Length: 483
Length: 119
Image (cartoon, rainbow over all chains, first blue to last red; front, side, top):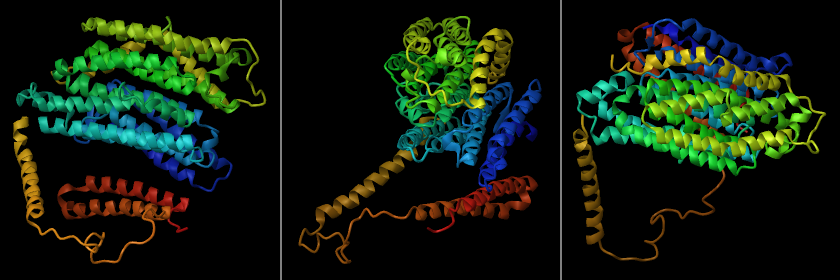
Protein backbone atom coordinates (compact mmCIF):
# COMPACT_ATOMS: atom_id res chain seq x y z
CA UNK A 1 0.00 0.00 0.00
CA UNK A 2 1.20 3.42 -0.86
CA UNK A 3 -0.81 6.29 0.53
CA UNK A 4 1.18 8.91 -1.38
CA UNK A 5 -0.88 8.11 -4.48
CA UNK A 6 -3.84 9.71 -2.72
CA UNK A 7 -2.27 13.17 -2.89
CA UNK A 8 -4.26 14.61 -5.83
CA UNK A 9 -7.50 13.68 -4.11
CA UNK A 10 -6.35 14.78 -0.66
CA UNK A 11 -5.10 18.15 -1.90
CA UNK A 12 -8.38 18.96 -3.61
CA UNK A 13 -10.66 17.80 -0.81
CA UNK A 14 -8.50 19.51 1.83
CA UNK A 15 -8.56 22.73 -0.15
CA UNK A 16 -12.33 22.43 -0.36
CA UNK A 17 -12.65 22.45 3.43
CA UNK A 18 -10.10 25.25 3.69
CA UNK A 19 -11.95 27.37 1.13
CA UNK A 20 -15.19 26.99 3.09
CA UNK A 21 -13.42 28.27 6.20
CA UNK A 22 -11.67 31.11 4.37
CA UNK A 23 -15.07 32.18 3.08
CA UNK A 24 -16.29 33.02 6.58
CA UNK A 25 -13.25 35.10 7.49
CA UNK A 26 -14.03 38.78 8.03
CA UNK A 27 -14.33 40.08 4.47
CA UNK A 28 -11.50 42.48 4.01
CA UNK A 29 -10.71 43.39 0.45
CA UNK A 30 -7.72 41.11 0.18
CA UNK A 31 -9.51 38.20 1.84
CA UNK A 32 -12.27 38.19 -0.77
CA UNK A 33 -10.28 36.36 -3.39
CA UNK A 34 -8.77 33.86 -0.96
CA UNK A 35 -11.21 30.92 -1.44
CA UNK A 36 -10.98 31.03 -5.22
CA UNK A 37 -7.21 31.50 -5.12
CA UNK A 38 -6.86 28.53 -2.75
CA UNK A 39 -8.94 26.47 -5.14
CA UNK A 40 -6.88 27.34 -8.18
CA UNK A 41 -3.58 26.70 -6.38
CA UNK A 42 -4.83 23.32 -5.10
CA UNK A 43 -6.09 22.24 -8.50
CA UNK A 44 -2.83 23.23 -10.17
CA UNK A 45 -0.99 21.24 -7.48
CA UNK A 46 -3.25 18.25 -8.19
CA UNK A 47 -2.42 18.45 -11.91
CA UNK A 48 1.29 18.58 -11.11
CA UNK A 49 0.97 15.62 -8.73
CA UNK A 50 -0.82 13.49 -11.31
CA UNK A 51 1.78 14.48 -13.87
CA UNK A 52 4.55 13.39 -11.49
CA UNK A 53 2.89 10.05 -10.82
CA UNK A 54 2.24 9.40 -14.52
CA UNK A 55 4.54 6.71 -15.81
CA UNK A 56 4.96 5.07 -12.45
CA UNK A 57 3.56 1.61 -11.82
CA UNK A 58 -0.13 1.17 -11.10
CA UNK A 59 -0.78 1.40 -7.38
CA UNK A 60 -3.64 0.62 -5.09
CA UNK A 61 -4.17 2.28 -1.74
CA UNK A 62 -6.50 1.85 1.21
CA UNK A 63 -6.96 -1.90 0.73
CA UNK A 64 -7.67 -1.68 -3.02
CA UNK A 65 -10.37 0.89 -2.46
CA UNK A 66 -8.38 3.50 -4.37
CA UNK A 67 -6.79 2.70 -7.71
CA UNK A 68 -4.07 4.92 -9.02
CA UNK A 69 -3.53 3.87 -12.62
CA UNK A 70 -3.11 5.98 -15.72
CA UNK A 71 -6.86 6.16 -16.18
CA UNK A 72 -7.20 7.80 -12.75
CA UNK A 73 -4.31 10.19 -13.36
CA UNK A 74 -5.57 11.26 -16.79
CA UNK A 75 -9.08 11.92 -15.48
CA UNK A 76 -7.71 13.69 -12.37
CA UNK A 77 -5.96 16.17 -14.65
CA UNK A 78 -9.03 16.71 -16.83
CA UNK A 79 -11.23 17.23 -13.78
CA UNK A 80 -8.76 19.63 -12.19
CA UNK A 81 -8.65 21.69 -15.39
CA UNK A 82 -12.46 21.77 -15.42
CA UNK A 83 -12.40 22.94 -11.80
CA UNK A 84 -10.01 25.78 -12.59
CA UNK A 85 -12.12 26.89 -15.56
CA UNK A 86 -15.31 26.90 -13.47
CA UNK A 87 -13.68 28.85 -10.64
CA UNK A 88 -12.55 31.44 -13.17
CA UNK A 89 -16.01 31.61 -14.77
CA UNK A 90 -17.60 32.13 -11.35
CA UNK A 91 -15.15 34.92 -10.56
CA UNK A 92 -17.07 38.13 -9.83
CA UNK A 93 -20.34 36.30 -10.47
CA UNK A 94 -23.00 38.29 -8.65
CA UNK A 95 -24.18 35.21 -6.79
CA UNK A 96 -20.72 34.60 -5.40
CA UNK A 97 -20.58 38.00 -3.73
CA UNK A 98 -21.44 36.85 -0.22
CA UNK A 99 -20.91 33.15 -0.86
CA UNK A 100 -17.32 33.01 -2.06
CA UNK A 101 -16.35 30.31 0.38
CA UNK A 102 -19.32 28.11 -0.48
CA UNK A 103 -18.84 28.58 -4.21
CA UNK A 104 -15.16 27.64 -4.24
CA UNK A 105 -15.41 25.07 -1.45
CA UNK A 106 -18.29 23.14 -2.97
CA UNK A 107 -16.74 23.21 -6.44
CA UNK A 108 -13.54 21.76 -4.96
CA UNK A 109 -15.38 19.09 -2.96
CA UNK A 110 -17.33 18.24 -6.07
CA UNK A 111 -14.14 17.87 -8.12
CA UNK A 112 -12.74 15.69 -5.31
CA UNK A 113 -15.83 13.46 -5.54
CA UNK A 114 -15.40 13.14 -9.31
CA UNK A 115 -11.75 12.21 -8.80
CA UNK A 116 -12.86 9.55 -6.33
CA UNK A 117 -15.21 8.07 -8.95
CA UNK A 118 -12.36 7.88 -11.45
CA UNK A 119 -10.13 6.18 -8.87
CA UNK A 120 -12.75 3.84 -7.45
CA UNK A 121 -11.52 0.32 -6.82
CA UNK A 122 -14.65 -0.86 -5.04
CA UNK A 123 -18.33 -0.25 -5.57
CA UNK A 124 -18.48 1.51 -2.20
CA UNK A 125 -15.90 4.15 -3.12
CA UNK A 126 -17.58 4.52 -6.51
CA UNK A 127 -20.88 5.33 -4.84
CA UNK A 128 -19.23 7.55 -2.25
CA UNK A 129 -17.61 9.61 -5.00
CA UNK A 130 -20.87 9.90 -6.92
CA UNK A 131 -22.68 11.09 -3.80
CA UNK A 132 -19.93 13.55 -2.87
CA UNK A 133 -20.11 15.35 -6.19
CA UNK A 134 -23.89 15.05 -6.48
CA UNK A 135 -24.65 16.50 -3.06
CA UNK A 136 -22.22 19.38 -3.66
CA UNK A 137 -23.92 20.06 -6.98
CA UNK A 138 -27.43 20.06 -5.46
CA UNK A 139 -26.33 22.93 -3.22
CA UNK A 140 -24.42 24.73 -5.97
CA UNK A 141 -27.53 24.67 -8.20
CA UNK A 142 -29.62 26.36 -5.51
CA UNK A 143 -26.94 28.84 -4.46
CA UNK A 144 -28.68 31.88 -5.96
CA UNK A 145 -31.28 31.71 -3.22
CA UNK A 146 -33.06 34.90 -4.23
CA UNK A 147 -33.90 33.47 -7.67
CA UNK A 148 -36.78 30.97 -7.65
CA UNK A 149 -35.53 29.30 -10.84
CA UNK A 150 -32.27 28.49 -9.11
CA UNK A 151 -34.06 27.00 -6.11
CA UNK A 152 -36.31 25.04 -8.45
CA UNK A 153 -33.24 23.68 -10.25
CA UNK A 154 -31.65 22.65 -6.96
CA UNK A 155 -34.81 20.91 -5.75
CA UNK A 156 -35.41 19.11 -9.05
CA UNK A 157 -31.82 17.98 -9.22
CA UNK A 158 -31.96 16.80 -5.61
CA UNK A 159 -35.09 14.70 -6.13
CA UNK A 160 -34.14 13.22 -9.50
CA UNK A 161 -30.54 12.75 -8.38
CA UNK A 162 -31.68 10.93 -5.26
CA UNK A 163 -33.86 8.62 -7.34
CA UNK A 164 -30.92 7.91 -9.64
CA UNK A 165 -28.57 7.30 -6.73
CA UNK A 166 -31.13 5.03 -5.08
CA UNK A 167 -31.48 2.86 -8.15
CA UNK A 168 -27.71 2.80 -8.63
CA UNK A 169 -26.98 1.73 -5.06
CA UNK A 170 -29.66 -0.94 -5.31
CA UNK A 171 -27.95 -2.28 -8.41
CA UNK A 172 -24.55 -2.21 -6.71
CA UNK A 173 -26.02 -4.05 -3.72
CA UNK A 174 -27.44 -6.76 -5.99
CA UNK A 175 -24.04 -7.01 -7.66
CA UNK A 176 -22.51 -7.58 -4.25
CA UNK A 177 -25.17 -10.20 -3.60
CA UNK A 178 -24.25 -11.99 -6.81
CA UNK A 179 -20.47 -11.85 -6.42
CA UNK A 180 -19.91 -11.63 -2.67
CA UNK A 181 -17.32 -8.90 -3.18
CA UNK A 182 -17.25 -5.14 -3.56
CA UNK A 183 -13.80 -5.12 -5.15
CA UNK A 184 -14.24 -4.32 -8.84
CA UNK A 185 -11.24 -6.34 -10.02
CA UNK A 186 -12.49 -9.51 -8.30
CA UNK A 187 -16.01 -9.42 -9.69
CA UNK A 188 -15.22 -11.13 -12.95
CA UNK A 189 -13.69 -14.17 -11.25
CA UNK A 190 -16.45 -14.31 -8.68
CA UNK A 191 -19.05 -14.35 -11.45
CA UNK A 192 -17.27 -17.13 -13.32
CA UNK A 193 -16.43 -19.20 -10.22
CA UNK A 194 -19.99 -19.00 -8.94
CA UNK A 195 -21.32 -19.83 -12.42
CA UNK A 196 -23.34 -16.62 -12.25
CA UNK A 197 -22.90 -15.34 -15.79
CA UNK A 198 -26.31 -16.62 -16.85
CA UNK A 199 -28.06 -15.97 -13.56
CA UNK A 200 -30.87 -13.38 -13.40
CA UNK A 201 -29.34 -11.71 -10.31
CA UNK A 202 -26.33 -10.01 -11.97
CA UNK A 203 -28.55 -9.10 -14.92
CA UNK A 204 -30.98 -7.33 -12.61
CA UNK A 205 -27.99 -5.59 -11.01
CA UNK A 206 -26.68 -4.58 -14.42
CA UNK A 207 -30.04 -3.11 -15.43
CA UNK A 208 -30.28 -0.99 -12.30
CA UNK A 209 -26.69 0.22 -12.63
CA UNK A 210 -27.31 1.28 -16.25
CA UNK A 211 -30.43 3.18 -15.16
CA UNK A 212 -28.66 4.83 -12.19
CA UNK A 213 -25.67 5.93 -14.22
CA UNK A 214 -28.03 6.92 -17.04
CA UNK A 215 -29.54 9.50 -14.67
CA UNK A 216 -26.11 10.90 -13.85
CA UNK A 217 -24.95 10.97 -17.48
CA UNK A 218 -28.38 12.29 -18.58
CA UNK A 219 -29.05 9.57 -21.13
CA UNK A 220 -32.54 9.35 -22.65
CA UNK A 221 -35.03 8.36 -21.13
CA UNK A 222 -33.43 9.49 -17.85
CA UNK A 223 -32.64 12.99 -19.10
CA UNK A 224 -35.84 14.89 -18.26
CA UNK A 225 -34.19 16.81 -15.41
CA UNK A 226 -31.34 18.08 -17.58
CA UNK A 227 -32.87 21.08 -19.41
CA UNK A 228 -34.65 22.49 -16.33
CA UNK A 229 -31.67 22.10 -14.03
CA UNK A 230 -29.15 23.41 -16.57
CA UNK A 231 -31.44 26.35 -17.28
CA UNK A 232 -32.06 27.29 -13.66
CA UNK A 233 -28.62 26.79 -12.16
CA UNK A 234 -26.06 29.64 -12.13
CA UNK A 235 -24.36 29.47 -15.53
CA UNK A 236 -20.81 28.65 -14.30
CA UNK A 237 -22.33 25.75 -12.36
CA UNK A 238 -24.20 24.65 -15.47
CA UNK A 239 -20.87 24.58 -17.29
CA UNK A 240 -19.49 22.52 -14.43
CA UNK A 241 -22.38 20.04 -14.54
CA UNK A 242 -22.19 19.75 -18.31
CA UNK A 243 -18.48 18.90 -18.27
CA UNK A 244 -17.50 17.50 -14.87
CA UNK A 245 -20.55 15.32 -14.24
CA UNK A 246 -20.29 13.90 -17.72
CA UNK A 247 -16.61 13.01 -17.20
CA UNK A 248 -17.35 11.40 -13.82
CA UNK A 249 -20.39 9.47 -15.06
CA UNK A 250 -18.42 8.03 -17.94
CA UNK A 251 -15.51 7.23 -15.64
CA UNK A 252 -17.99 5.13 -13.65
CA UNK A 253 -19.33 3.56 -16.85
CA UNK A 254 -15.81 2.61 -17.92
CA UNK A 255 -14.74 1.30 -14.51
CA UNK A 256 -17.84 -0.85 -14.23
CA UNK A 257 -18.72 -1.91 -17.75
CA UNK A 258 -15.56 -1.73 -19.81
CA UNK A 259 -13.51 -3.26 -17.01
CA UNK A 260 -15.01 -5.26 -14.20
CA UNK A 261 -18.18 -6.44 -15.94
CA UNK A 262 -16.63 -6.99 -19.35
CA UNK A 263 -17.33 -10.71 -18.91
CA UNK A 264 -21.02 -9.92 -19.17
CA UNK A 265 -20.47 -8.00 -22.41
CA UNK A 266 -23.07 -10.05 -24.27
CA UNK A 267 -25.68 -9.08 -21.72
CA UNK A 268 -25.11 -5.33 -21.57
CA UNK A 269 -23.94 -4.54 -25.07
CA UNK A 270 -27.33 -4.40 -26.82
CA UNK A 271 -29.15 -2.45 -24.05
CA UNK A 272 -26.33 0.10 -23.88
CA UNK A 273 -26.26 0.36 -27.69
CA UNK A 274 -30.02 0.99 -27.79
CA UNK A 275 -29.69 3.54 -24.98
CA UNK A 276 -26.98 5.30 -27.01
CA UNK A 277 -29.09 5.34 -30.19
CA UNK A 278 -32.20 6.69 -28.45
CA UNK A 279 -30.13 9.31 -26.61
CA UNK A 280 -28.49 10.56 -29.81
CA UNK A 281 -31.78 10.83 -31.72
CA UNK A 282 -34.00 12.32 -28.98
CA UNK A 283 -31.29 14.66 -27.68
CA UNK A 284 -30.60 16.10 -31.12
CA UNK A 285 -34.25 16.48 -32.12
CA UNK A 286 -35.19 18.14 -28.82
CA UNK A 287 -32.23 20.52 -29.10
CA UNK A 288 -33.63 21.79 -32.43
CA UNK A 289 -36.67 23.22 -30.64
CA UNK A 290 -34.94 25.20 -27.87
CA UNK A 291 -35.01 29.01 -27.91
CA UNK A 292 -32.67 29.33 -24.91
CA UNK A 293 -28.94 28.85 -25.27
CA UNK A 294 -28.63 27.00 -21.95
CA UNK A 295 -31.53 24.67 -22.75
CA UNK A 296 -30.13 24.06 -26.20
CA UNK A 297 -26.73 23.22 -24.72
CA UNK A 298 -28.47 20.95 -22.20
CA UNK A 299 -30.08 18.89 -24.95
CA UNK A 300 -26.86 19.02 -26.91
CA UNK A 301 -25.19 17.59 -23.80
CA UNK A 302 -27.77 14.80 -23.80
CA UNK A 303 -26.95 14.03 -27.43
CA UNK A 304 -23.22 14.11 -26.70
CA UNK A 305 -23.77 11.60 -23.88
CA UNK A 306 -25.31 9.39 -26.58
CA UNK A 307 -22.16 9.62 -28.72
CA UNK A 308 -20.05 8.73 -25.68
CA UNK A 309 -22.27 5.73 -24.93
CA UNK A 310 -21.52 4.46 -28.44
CA UNK A 311 -17.89 4.09 -27.34
CA UNK A 312 -18.95 2.21 -24.20
CA UNK A 313 -21.22 -0.10 -26.23
CA UNK A 314 -18.23 -1.04 -28.41
CA UNK A 315 -16.70 -2.66 -25.34
CA UNK A 316 -13.16 -2.53 -26.70
CA UNK A 317 -9.89 -0.75 -25.95
CA UNK A 318 -10.51 1.39 -29.02
CA UNK A 319 -13.93 2.30 -27.65
CA UNK A 320 -12.61 3.41 -24.26
CA UNK A 321 -9.77 5.29 -25.95
CA UNK A 322 -12.31 7.11 -28.13
CA UNK A 323 -14.49 7.93 -25.12
CA UNK A 324 -11.51 9.42 -23.27
CA UNK A 325 -10.43 11.47 -26.27
CA UNK A 326 -13.97 12.64 -26.89
CA UNK A 327 -14.30 13.66 -23.23
CA UNK A 328 -11.23 15.91 -23.71
CA UNK A 329 -12.73 17.44 -26.84
CA UNK A 330 -16.21 17.70 -25.33
CA UNK A 331 -14.87 19.48 -22.24
CA UNK A 332 -13.04 22.07 -24.34
CA UNK A 333 -15.94 22.86 -26.66
CA UNK A 334 -18.63 22.89 -23.97
CA UNK A 335 -16.55 25.12 -21.73
CA UNK A 336 -15.96 27.55 -24.62
CA UNK A 337 -19.68 27.71 -25.39
CA UNK A 338 -20.62 28.30 -21.76
CA UNK A 339 -17.94 30.96 -21.31
CA UNK A 340 -19.63 32.98 -24.06
CA UNK A 341 -23.03 32.47 -22.41
CA UNK A 342 -21.64 33.57 -19.02
CA UNK A 343 -20.29 36.74 -20.62
CA UNK A 344 -23.46 37.50 -22.56
CA UNK A 345 -25.68 36.85 -19.57
CA UNK A 346 -23.93 39.55 -17.59
CA UNK A 347 -24.11 42.04 -20.47
CA UNK A 348 -27.76 41.92 -21.50
CA UNK A 349 -31.13 41.00 -20.09
CA UNK A 350 -32.14 37.46 -21.12
CA UNK A 351 -28.57 36.95 -22.24
CA UNK A 352 -29.05 33.21 -22.24
CA UNK A 353 -31.40 33.37 -25.24
CA UNK A 354 -29.98 32.54 -28.64
CA UNK A 355 -31.29 35.88 -29.92
CA UNK A 356 -29.07 37.72 -27.45
CA UNK A 357 -26.04 36.50 -29.39
CA UNK A 358 -27.10 38.45 -32.49
CA UNK A 359 -24.20 40.36 -33.97
CA UNK A 360 -21.73 39.24 -31.34
CA UNK A 361 -19.30 38.43 -34.16
CA UNK A 362 -19.25 42.12 -35.14
CA UNK A 363 -19.24 43.76 -31.74
CA UNK A 364 -16.88 41.22 -30.14
CA UNK A 365 -15.01 39.38 -32.88
CA UNK A 366 -12.99 37.34 -30.43
CA UNK A 367 -16.06 35.97 -28.65
CA UNK A 368 -17.68 35.38 -32.03
CA UNK A 369 -14.73 33.26 -33.11
CA UNK A 370 -14.77 31.33 -29.82
CA UNK A 371 -18.48 30.61 -30.17
CA UNK A 372 -18.11 29.60 -33.82
CA UNK A 373 -15.26 27.22 -33.04
CA UNK A 374 -17.24 25.65 -30.19
CA UNK A 375 -20.38 25.18 -32.29
CA UNK A 376 -18.55 23.83 -35.35
CA UNK A 377 -16.59 21.41 -33.18
CA UNK A 378 -19.72 20.26 -31.34
CA UNK A 379 -21.38 19.69 -34.71
CA UNK A 380 -18.37 17.64 -35.76
CA UNK A 381 -16.81 19.72 -38.50
CA UNK A 382 -13.38 18.54 -39.65
CA UNK A 383 -10.62 19.18 -38.73
CA UNK A 384 -11.75 20.24 -35.22
CA UNK A 385 -11.54 18.12 -32.08
CA UNK A 386 -15.20 17.11 -32.15
CA UNK A 387 -14.81 15.60 -35.60
CA UNK A 388 -11.81 13.47 -34.67
CA UNK A 389 -13.54 12.31 -31.49
CA UNK A 390 -16.72 11.31 -33.29
CA UNK A 391 -14.68 9.63 -36.01
CA UNK A 392 -12.93 7.51 -33.37
CA UNK A 393 -16.19 6.68 -31.59
CA UNK A 394 -18.01 5.64 -34.76
CA UNK A 395 -14.92 3.74 -35.93
CA UNK A 396 -14.84 1.78 -32.67
CA UNK A 397 -18.53 0.96 -33.12
CA UNK A 398 -17.98 -0.33 -36.67
CA UNK A 399 -15.07 -2.48 -35.51
CA UNK A 400 -17.31 -3.95 -32.82
CA UNK A 401 -19.96 -4.95 -35.39
CA UNK A 402 -22.24 -2.10 -34.41
CA UNK A 403 -22.35 -0.45 -37.82
CA UNK A 404 -26.02 0.43 -37.38
CA UNK A 405 -25.14 2.39 -34.24
CA UNK A 406 -22.43 4.32 -36.08
CA UNK A 407 -25.01 5.19 -38.75
CA UNK A 408 -27.46 6.39 -36.09
CA UNK A 409 -24.64 8.54 -34.65
CA UNK A 410 -23.88 10.03 -38.06
CA UNK A 411 -27.56 10.78 -38.67
CA UNK A 412 -27.72 12.42 -35.25
CA UNK A 413 -24.74 14.61 -36.12
CA UNK A 414 -26.48 15.73 -39.28
CA UNK A 415 -29.59 16.70 -37.31
CA UNK A 416 -27.37 18.61 -34.89
CA UNK A 417 -26.15 20.88 -37.72
CA UNK A 418 -29.62 22.41 -37.61
CA UNK A 419 -29.16 23.99 -34.20
CA UNK A 420 -25.39 24.44 -33.97
CA UNK A 421 -25.19 26.27 -37.28
CA UNK A 422 -28.19 28.41 -36.34
CA UNK A 423 -26.17 29.83 -33.45
CA UNK A 424 -23.22 30.53 -35.76
CA UNK A 425 -25.53 32.27 -38.22
CA UNK A 426 -27.09 34.40 -35.48
CA UNK A 427 -23.68 35.33 -34.14
CA UNK A 428 -22.47 36.75 -37.46
CA UNK A 429 -25.81 38.22 -38.51
CA UNK A 430 -25.93 41.92 -39.19
CA UNK A 431 -28.62 44.04 -37.66
CA UNK A 432 -28.96 46.17 -34.59
CA UNK A 433 -26.62 44.71 -31.99
CA UNK A 434 -28.26 43.94 -28.65
CA UNK A 435 -25.33 45.32 -26.80
CA UNK A 436 -24.59 47.04 -23.60
CA UNK A 437 -21.19 48.38 -24.46
CA UNK A 438 -20.71 49.94 -21.05
CA UNK A 439 -20.05 46.54 -19.53
CA UNK A 440 -16.54 45.20 -19.52
CA UNK A 441 -16.14 41.44 -19.50
CA UNK A 442 -14.04 40.22 -16.57
CA UNK A 443 -10.68 39.08 -17.84
CA UNK A 444 -11.10 35.67 -16.21
CA UNK A 445 -14.11 34.85 -18.41
CA UNK A 446 -12.26 35.96 -21.53
CA UNK A 447 -9.30 33.80 -20.53
CA UNK A 448 -11.49 30.71 -20.10
CA UNK A 449 -13.19 31.37 -23.45
CA UNK A 450 -9.96 31.88 -25.37
CA UNK A 451 -8.09 29.00 -23.72
CA UNK A 452 -11.02 26.62 -24.31
CA UNK A 453 -11.25 27.68 -27.94
CA UNK A 454 -7.51 27.20 -28.31
CA UNK A 455 -7.90 23.77 -26.72
CA UNK A 456 -10.49 22.81 -29.36
CA UNK A 457 -7.87 23.45 -32.03
CA UNK A 458 -4.95 22.03 -30.04
CA UNK A 459 -6.75 18.80 -29.08
CA UNK A 460 -7.25 18.25 -32.81
CA UNK A 461 -3.74 19.39 -33.77
CA UNK A 462 -2.03 17.17 -31.20
CA UNK A 463 -4.48 14.31 -31.67
CA UNK A 464 -1.68 11.76 -32.00
CA UNK A 465 0.11 12.27 -28.68
CA UNK A 466 -3.22 12.72 -26.90
CA UNK A 467 -4.57 9.50 -28.38
CA UNK A 468 -1.43 7.71 -27.19
CA UNK A 469 -2.17 9.11 -23.73
CA UNK A 470 -5.77 7.92 -23.92
CA UNK A 471 -4.83 4.48 -25.18
CA UNK A 472 -2.23 4.20 -22.38
CA UNK A 473 -5.00 4.92 -19.92
CA UNK A 474 -7.43 2.55 -21.62
CA UNK A 475 -4.94 -0.28 -22.00
CA UNK A 476 -4.22 -0.39 -18.28
CA UNK A 477 -7.90 -0.93 -17.73
CA UNK A 478 -9.26 -3.42 -20.15
CA UNK A 479 -8.04 -6.88 -19.49
CA UNK A 480 -6.91 -6.24 -15.91
CA UNK A 481 -9.48 -8.92 -15.16
CA UNK A 482 -7.98 -11.42 -17.57
CA UNK A 483 -4.49 -11.12 -16.20
CA UNK B 1 -24.06 -17.43 -4.73
CA UNK B 2 -27.10 -17.65 -6.91
CA UNK B 3 -30.51 -16.13 -6.64
CA UNK B 4 -31.66 -19.39 -5.03
CA UNK B 5 -29.46 -18.69 -2.00
CA UNK B 6 -31.66 -15.72 -1.22
CA UNK B 7 -34.78 -17.87 -0.97
CA UNK B 8 -34.80 -17.54 2.85
CA UNK B 9 -35.24 -13.79 2.43
CA UNK B 10 -38.34 -14.36 0.33
CA UNK B 11 -39.64 -16.89 2.86
CA UNK B 12 -39.05 -14.35 5.62
CA UNK B 13 -41.11 -11.73 3.79
CA UNK B 14 -43.84 -14.29 3.09
CA UNK B 15 -44.06 -15.30 6.76
CA UNK B 16 -44.23 -11.64 7.75
CA UNK B 17 -47.11 -11.05 5.33
CA UNK B 18 -49.00 -14.17 6.38
CA UNK B 19 -48.67 -13.58 10.13
CA UNK B 20 -49.52 -9.89 9.93
CA UNK B 21 -52.39 -10.48 7.52
CA UNK B 22 -53.80 -13.35 9.60
CA UNK B 23 -53.81 -11.36 12.84
CA UNK B 24 -55.44 -8.30 11.31
CA UNK B 25 -57.86 -10.42 9.29
CA UNK B 26 -58.88 -12.47 12.32
CA UNK B 27 -59.59 -9.41 14.43
CA UNK B 28 -61.56 -7.92 11.54
CA UNK B 29 -63.68 -11.05 11.21
CA UNK B 30 -64.33 -11.84 14.85
CA UNK B 31 -64.51 -8.43 16.53
CA UNK B 32 -67.74 -6.96 17.82
CA UNK B 33 -68.98 -4.27 15.52
CA UNK B 34 -70.60 -1.59 17.64
CA UNK B 35 -70.22 1.97 16.44
CA UNK B 36 -71.01 5.22 18.17
CA UNK B 37 -69.93 8.84 17.90
CA UNK B 38 -67.26 8.69 20.57
CA UNK B 39 -65.63 5.63 19.03
CA UNK B 40 -65.25 7.41 15.66
CA UNK B 41 -63.11 10.22 17.11
CA UNK B 42 -59.41 10.33 16.22
CA UNK B 43 -58.40 9.85 19.85
CA UNK B 44 -61.04 7.86 21.61
CA UNK B 45 -59.71 8.65 25.06
CA UNK B 46 -57.69 11.80 24.53
CA UNK B 47 -58.03 15.51 24.02
CA UNK B 48 -59.35 16.50 20.62
CA UNK B 49 -56.84 18.19 18.34
CA UNK B 50 -57.60 21.83 17.61
CA UNK B 51 -56.21 24.30 15.12
CA UNK B 52 -54.51 23.73 11.77
CA UNK B 53 -52.22 20.73 11.46
CA UNK B 54 -49.82 22.31 8.99
CA UNK B 55 -48.22 24.89 11.20
CA UNK B 56 -44.99 26.49 10.15
CA UNK B 57 -42.03 25.75 12.35
CA UNK B 58 -38.98 27.91 12.68
CA UNK B 59 -36.17 26.73 10.39
CA UNK B 60 -33.92 26.77 13.45
CA UNK B 61 -35.46 23.52 14.67
CA UNK B 62 -34.33 21.71 11.51
CA UNK B 63 -30.93 23.37 11.55
CA UNK B 64 -30.29 22.40 15.14
CA UNK B 65 -31.54 18.87 14.54
CA UNK B 66 -29.22 18.46 11.54
CA UNK B 67 -26.23 19.78 13.44
CA UNK B 68 -27.05 17.50 16.34
CA UNK B 69 -27.12 14.44 14.09
CA UNK B 70 -23.80 15.37 12.46
CA UNK B 71 -22.00 15.64 15.76
CA UNK B 72 -23.86 12.70 17.21
CA UNK B 73 -22.55 10.44 14.45
CA UNK B 74 -19.06 11.42 15.55
CA UNK B 75 -19.62 9.50 18.79
CA UNK B 76 -20.80 6.46 16.87
CA UNK B 77 -17.32 6.34 15.34
CA UNK B 78 -15.41 7.20 18.51
CA UNK B 79 -16.83 4.54 20.73
CA UNK B 80 -16.02 1.42 18.66
CA UNK B 81 -12.52 2.78 18.03
CA UNK B 82 -11.92 3.18 21.75
CA UNK B 83 -12.90 -0.45 22.26
CA UNK B 84 -10.61 -1.94 19.62
CA UNK B 85 -7.84 0.66 19.73
CA UNK B 86 -5.10 -1.80 20.75
CA UNK B 87 -5.67 -4.16 17.86
CA UNK B 88 -6.13 -1.60 15.04
CA UNK B 89 -3.13 0.57 15.86
CA UNK B 90 -2.04 4.08 15.02
CA UNK B 91 -3.42 4.25 11.48
CA UNK B 92 -7.01 4.24 12.74
CA UNK B 93 -6.25 7.05 15.19
CA UNK B 94 -4.78 9.13 12.36
CA UNK B 95 -7.84 8.48 10.22
CA UNK B 96 -10.23 9.40 13.01
CA UNK B 97 -8.22 12.54 13.78
CA UNK B 98 -8.58 13.60 10.14
CA UNK B 99 -12.31 12.97 10.42
CA UNK B 100 -12.54 15.09 13.56
CA UNK B 101 -10.50 17.88 11.94
CA UNK B 102 -12.94 18.01 9.02
CA UNK B 103 -15.86 17.96 11.44
CA UNK B 104 -14.21 20.70 13.51
CA UNK B 105 -13.85 22.80 10.37
CA UNK B 106 -17.55 22.28 9.83
CA UNK B 107 -18.29 23.43 13.37
CA UNK B 108 -16.15 26.55 12.90
CA UNK B 109 -18.03 27.23 9.66
CA UNK B 110 -21.53 26.95 11.11
CA UNK B 111 -20.47 28.97 14.13
CA UNK B 112 -19.20 31.87 12.00
CA UNK B 113 -22.30 31.64 9.81
CA UNK B 114 -24.44 32.10 12.92
CA UNK B 115 -26.26 28.79 12.61
CA UNK B 116 -25.87 28.21 16.33
CA UNK B 117 -27.79 31.37 17.28
CA UNK B 118 -31.47 31.06 17.92
CA UNK B 119 -33.37 33.75 16.05
